[in-house]
Length: 479
Image 1 (cartoon, rainbow, N blue to C red):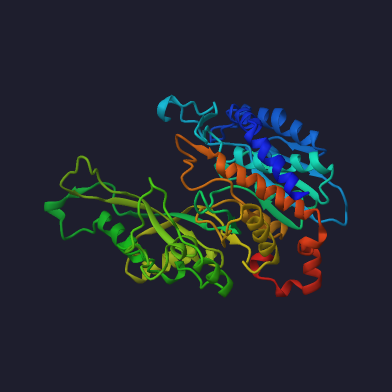
Image 2 (image 1 turned 90 degrees about the vertical axis):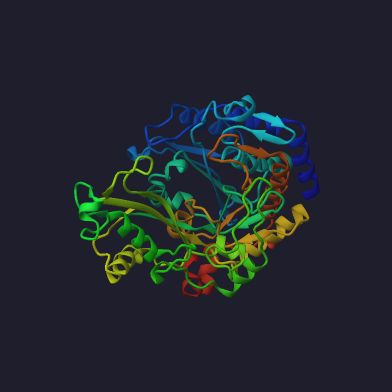
């Protein structure tokens, strides 16, 4: 049966049907931005997703501009058996700006273009191509067997590219409707184009500003040099107090917690391999004793995003009175995010830099499920069966996505199966989707969904596992 399903998936992609469907999705200019909600997003939900889901037996509930949040949500449910496991899938309908005129070789971001298996178009990788793989896998199974054998919920939002406004509040308000045993979703990249990847969460992003506002005007460096504190020098010292010139985080309160043995073992099996056009990692940067995998996926890294003082292009002979810097800490789950701001302020004060103010700009939480969770072994085994390749199991990706909503609000284990790769150019001109990954993605998702319909092949439903072993025995990220 499963081989027949895989054959149907292959025919679906090779026939051009998948490409045609993706071309229709790409043609919707469903941009989200801070300047207002796109009418194309409404059209994408109403014209594409709702009819597609309804035709597969899902009941749909649309929540446009939910509570004036700037975000719309779509819940689609197919309930087959109250005793069967319930799976939650997530995707986002919005894309970043098309950046027309910046794409190479006359490519149009809103018209899908095939160049030897590289399919160019805005949203192909992030996220329309990815959620199409999952939707098509469901349809292929239903065409072959008329039933899934489990309950399935799709949640789509329209504001992921602008920080998922009110997603947490929406999920909390619809907790009963969205409750599931496991999340299986697709976003973000594989570790590389060739390696099927399963990741379990995301690093957080804590962005803050350092400001030294010492006086209103700059003053002549000859008349005042040596007498007045230089705001630019002060900010440089503040940055150095937090992260040194080789990228090492100096402040203990910003450093990463130790990895669990299972997480460390999973990371030791991985290697970061840059693509041909990517820069080579600097072996002396950050912590030379750590592997590239540990540096990228299991470390707290503090990056300086911007520095400002005076006019670099036209400097004057004056001591800057004001200077600032914007920094971002990419951090892993288990870090004490609530302590970041107090730790930064205290660390600067201890170094005599109390005149530097610290202001939080934004915060995206970190979260992940433990590698030892039984759903992880179940999924990685099926992925290897489907592809004939080793599956890279990542505790978290280096970037950020709204995983914390599902872990913290719904309390479900989260399995992310990406159908893209690091070189896909998401958020930039020339975004693309690889047909080869699409083919593997269809096999993987058909395999996962098929096995979910056979109770003997998957772990106990999550709520039953909690009842049997007790929540106190679960890792914090799993509660």
